[in-house]
Image (cartoon, rainbow, N blue to C red; front, side, top):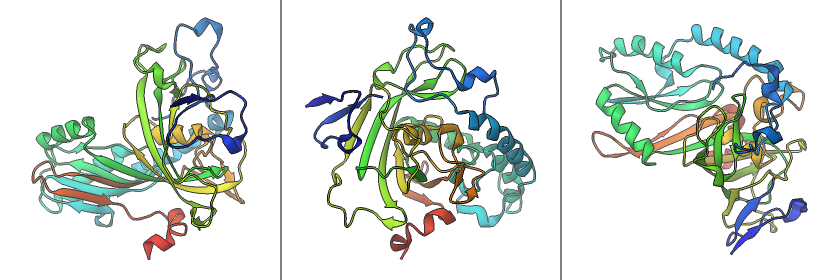
Length: 339
């Protein structure tokens, strides 16, 4: 049975049972004219799909330039060390990228590290990319032919990725959820959520809306292991097919929620956009309504960590699981799992 929710519904009844498909109402930084932060749809733009997530907030306009300059300076001085290496063989090397470092700086500093061991460094390619402020597993291939195999593996969804995100919002009523939506650039270049049914439609810049799918699992709420003593939460996985604007706002900042995200697609800012849509924006992610100040501290980047990559080795065929060390903000909520 497919159910479409009305515009005005109590938040306590926001999620339906897992047997129902639910429809909801509801890159680097692009410096353009100030209207890019307030590009709400107008009657003149009705020929194009209407974005369902909010435009970039004014706070983002104030903070992001400083973050970009700081990251540029930090990246220019960055040196990759052996302590950053998670895995290495003759075809691949995986490293733990720090927050606030651009991917290109990781790649450019890798030859110095590999030259120490006499490895070939002329064919290095980034197999995956992480946002500037996202930490965690980055995979680099050492040969062109291996890079080509990874492109196909990612395209065929044969590489599984998990992320950890520290969110601040209202604790959700679900334990597991999968959200399906569209993804694209709005009129002035900002990445936005679109309706799932808009996939394939043309956007103002000439690009197309693409599909975007992420599964989430709540790991802890307010530092406590989740849901073991709570009876009114759904235990089965819910599915959200985005068709309209979310009725959950991001203005209520009450709970700390640690989630594990598993993106099936690989769209720019995918997890960040879906967290915003679900009303649990990532702490420090001012671009997508995350808190900048929380409990007396200011956050210079968002708390998103590429936890793991798993795939079949492109040469040996053996299953590979790459895991990055946990960031400090994830250790306390996950203390029972670590033990």
